[in-house]
Length: 144
Image (cartoon, rainbow, N blue to C red; front, side, top):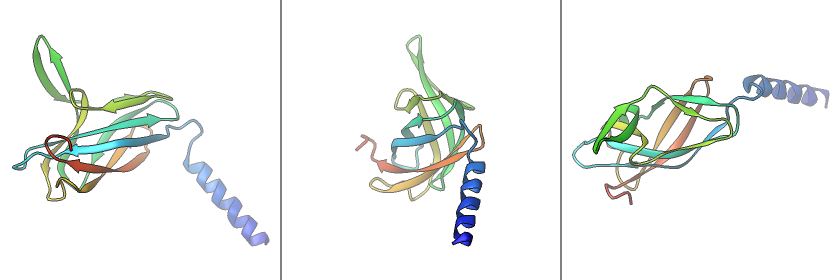
């Protein structure tokens, strides 16, 4: 009995040490990629929910992509443009949506796993050193 209590106490201490008080607690929902034909880049869309302190999304990676970048689409003076961004702030207690026409992931050189009807993993890295992995549905060019 004492050994079991000691093991439980050690496990709880270890878990508590691994999660700083007030740390970001980011979850991912509504995750999907728009796969395009002929090895064209695939756009990734999702929503981040932060139940902790403010944090920056600094990177994403997936074995289904040659390169996976954070991007943002904008419209200025009637002209659409897209550019890579270094990070995106996820506010404390807030939500940020990555959607067509705004922030999104850009998957260049998609691998064979990027097939409509499939799923691919994406790992997100944050400025506080945490990571989270989510499964993205792969949809066709119309988003279905």
